Image (cartoon, rainbow, N blue to C red; front, side):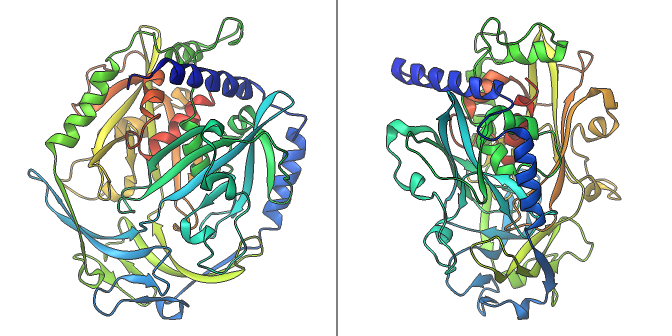
Length: 476
């Protein structure tokens, strides 16, 4: 991960500009009070009606007579197929439905320097599967099917900024994974592109600073996970003298030190990478699509594909009506997880430097075997009433953690274009210095600066971990 001098200088300059934007928590371009009025209006006018319907009533969708896969007649968008996962070692194989979408999506922000500060062009985007419908989303959140007009809808605003951006205007560009428990090898391109030209906004779009966005992260169901995922990948730097302020809690002081690449760390960065690489090298995970109609342990009913015991998730048919989307009416399948998902990031100070506890973990649809994920990532109810089944490491500790240890608690939903009411609780927890440093082999203590170096590249942190890192940065 060694960078050349010009690359390092460019990254440091970008980090400086983003840091200034992060310190700017209000703006004359879009004052906070005006944003609140604008966003409330967008939610009032979202006009979404989502109704579960039998699969037979979905227009343009049907089950393939040979494979049983649930597909769109265009062959685009996504499909629901069967997946057989064969872990190595003593772990038993399993089968499940999985979302297959081979197109690489764009998650992109246009940024522009306004009044001397970088502002992000954000979108109030309505998705059918989200409670309250509207979330603050990237400028463009679209697959190739969206922006090539497969659905015959309205064109995607601002997509032209991301199709062939001049290299000198690109501040961030990498591929990151989707939700690998439900998607098969799905990727999104994270892009931040700077424009020096005037860009018209208005309608569903407005300009916000990074500080304004981070201020909003503490509120339930306001920012999309896609927004958090992109923001987590921005270059960060330790504050210079005078920037951090004089009154700091011990937690914040340790967090700010953790942004310094020269700060003491439990493990060197090459060792952190080696730990994840070892999991990838020592484990083989077979992934094979199988006929959806033959997936073991699942049943296909008129309105859903689900397990008889009701665990994990179901695939359902939905009819959607919306005034604020490219298409006003459509039908589609949605994946509806069991409620109550939990993602928790444990943090603790080690020699005055904040570290986060990540787990190297294999997931069913992983593109590259394994990624780092949060300390805890599960739906607790899926693990209840199962004698003999191992409970996830640290789940009980997270559930029993005193409230004064929780530095951030936010409820967020998965992307509402594919998932229905997929709410998760995100926690950043300061476990304290009594928490053991010695942890199971799959877990690693990592500084925030080390995390940021990993996020310059692809497939190191999963979607939930990136979301929590974005929430952690909001606590600077």
